[in-house]
Image (cartoon, rainbow, N blue to C red; front, side, top):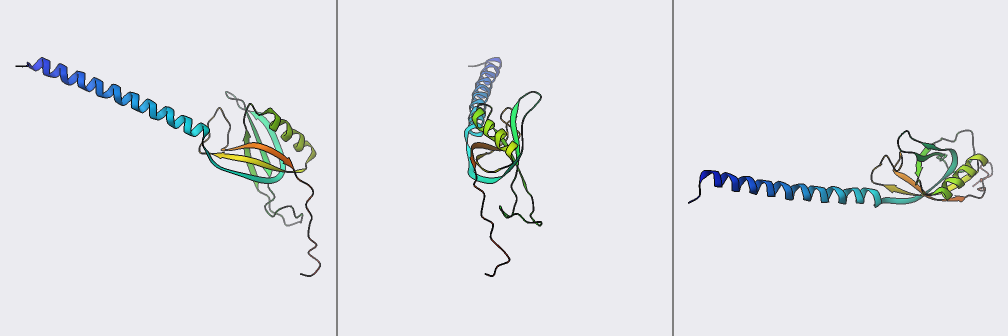
Length: 150
């Protein structure tokens, strides 16, 4: 027959095993979620506009950040055009893309940015969920003459 102290020891050991397994399971799930949030892409796309600013920012984590004026009504230049700003980040190891962005920001030319949208922002990657993967210079768009008829 088992004594009371043996029963409590068995229960304690059983609880310890359960919590160890639970801790390991939670650790594995946490690592899996970190990998998912780091590598998974929510969407890919292209935006065009004029680069306003590119900079390296951050106190603890230095990241490449930028802004682009999307000019909501396209490339048509008129006195009534609305402006929309697209905030983006550039991977720290992608110095070629950052160099192109610096170059086109100085010329003021219109560009197309290829981007990937991530699920979350991570402080060591960038301030936004949008990461630029490519920069293409745009040709000057043709502006239709609105004064002529249909």
